[in-house]
Image (cartoon, rainbow, N blue to C red; front, side, top):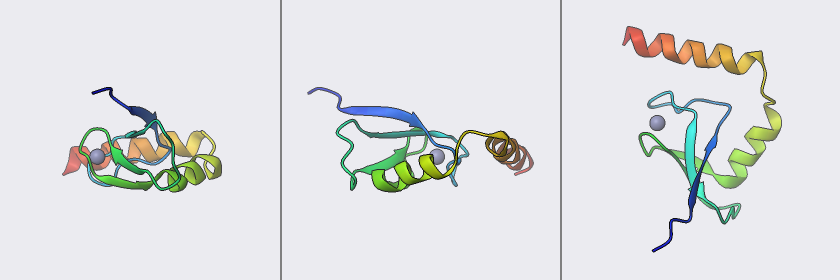
Length: 76
Ligand SMILES: [Zn+2]
């Protein structure tokens, strides 16, 4: 069976594990479910992901968020 999924990078980290990697179907239907690629938490539907990518251009805010997520992880 062919693997029809692909990975993308989200501007926001996973609320569970802090990973920015998500896994989704490469079909890209707006209602396709998008999951965290490291812990399988549901991150939303592809339409949500697309909107998030458009609303949050890669910027300094992203690296600050990532830094905060890493810091949180270390102190837990
Ligand atoms: Zn996760």
